[in-house]
Amino acid sequence: LSPTKSVASATHRNKMLRRTIPVLKTLVPLGDRVLVQRVVTATETKSGVLLPESSVKKTNEGSVVEVGPGTKDHDMTVKKGDTVVLPEYGGVSLKVDDTEMFLYREAEILAVIKE
Image (cartoon, helix red, strand yellow):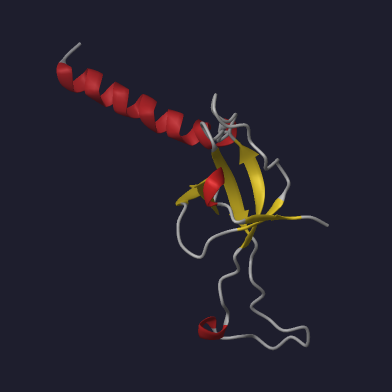
């Protein structure tokens, strides 16, 4: 095989993998990290009036999607499904299947909301 043919076939394989990976993809945080999906703020009032983006503030509340295994020195206290209070800034933003999620260390999470 010529070098250009092998590069072309490798590129074709990579394109095929990129298409199939999102279907099979599961994101599991490592160590003491927690994957959180922020609660979406309402952009419409109960009566149906649309609010401008400038008046809609970002909520500091989220739902835990996945939890890492912890470390040998630290057991995880938050669990999958918990509602948590998040800091205004921080976390790593990720796009998972067109959904924005955030990755935080457990120590960065401010509180768990109990119902």
